[in-house]
Image 1 (cartoon, one colour):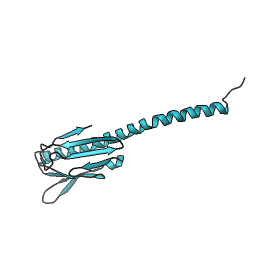
Image 2: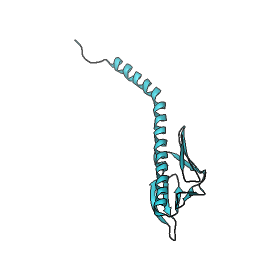
Image 3: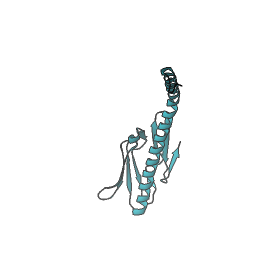
Image 4: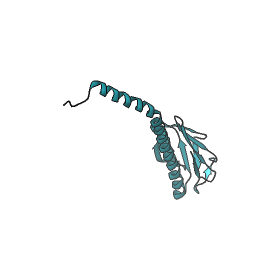
Length: 142
């Protein structure tokens, strides 16, 4: 009685695995893009809300500086004070564009010059956008 597999059987199985993997790769790549964009969008939204609540809590004006590599929040006063600094969406290989790179939030949480600011995060064929309102709210668009 013979145990094991022949070389031909091994080559056939490996060939089938290769074909199945090649068929599944585009779908997996799309999922990876979606996961990266979703995570980056969630982080930008969290950053915005954190800075907005800090402006309300401290009763001070806040300036948000949004970039692909970094997100910064600064209390504006006699001397500016950076109180929040996060890494940008680029760490997930997500491209980031903003209609305005600087947003100001007042002590009441209302935006100054931030109405309809559109933030777009994109990787591959997947894109999401965030829009600010003049009331300081943030809406997420899939």
